[in-house]
Length: 410
Ligand code: ATP
Ligand code: MG
Image (cartoon, rainbow, N blue to C red; front, side, top):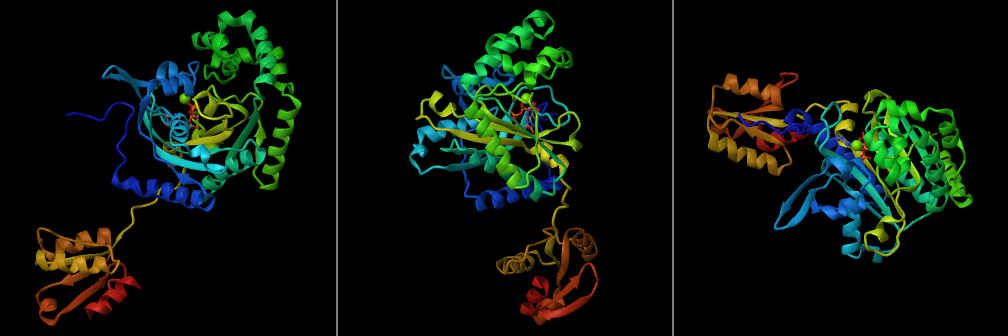
């Protein structure tokens, strides 16, 4: 038997209600705050990700699903910021009056070792806000994530924030970090050795416990805890904090937080849940002021985040699939279908038995999936009435059609 690929999962009917709630709440929160949905293709030119995500990242180095077609290198999107930025530039969205606020949801693909909370095809929901470098945009961005999580009943969250500074102030930090790491470089993992060359800050994000241990060295911790960012960046960060205070968003500053992608500057953040175990990050994001220009568009500051929907799913209270309003019990499938169509036109969700099985069987099914059984037997057809049974209270009434509809809708 052919099975689903390792690291992929079917989302089955018993779980779909929870997924739909995650999507409905997102739509509600984003609509209220003037975010427009954008849908971009699932595959893009490989170069978009190697440039846009960065070739010192795990994503580009080892996690991409890349294939050749007609001599082109194509990659299944591992994340969606690069795709949204490409669409933003290609479709001239930068001509709109800023801020331009976009959101997306959909499957992403990364070749990773599957484990709880980590799949090869997984889903993200995210926002990207273009055109404002102001810290108030950072505050709204983070607040939108928190409000969305709150709307799903999640309140036990840790919002961690940090500022990576700008290219100027980061340079000194990078050099100092390199200096302190060099004496022990041999002891770091192979990935970190590569990061040392390409993007040493990312060593702080290594998930390897032995590298983590090496980073605990006092001089390295001292460096991490220094206030290395320049005056403008410090002011930007201070304003962000004051806006978050104003919005009652609880946060902690984690000076070691750098995040996995190459393109971030200034604000980075992560939202963690204590309930998630080792894969505890639900949301990650940050400011990427240089990316639009780097990908060929006009210089445009931007900030965004992405959330892992499988991790969200495992955190929120599971909703049972909703019951139908009615199930038509009948031994005449044609009449039952006709009645169902009429009920559906009156906004009543309903179904019937195609095989006209015994009424007892039909009632059994009805009480599992519906709130009312609507009996359409010979006598009802003769008298042009319906017998409506409330499947919870077992109360039963013989009514004309319009009263039956009223009862079911009430
Ligand atoms: P992690 O450190 O867990 O690998 P990341 O830094 O690679 O995360 P991002 O690229 O920032 O993650 O993606 C944002 C969110 O998407 C993560 O916080 C997580 O919730 C989710 N996510 C990332 N990779 C996976 C995956 N393979 N399976 C399920 N969810 C994922
Ligand atoms: Mg990852």
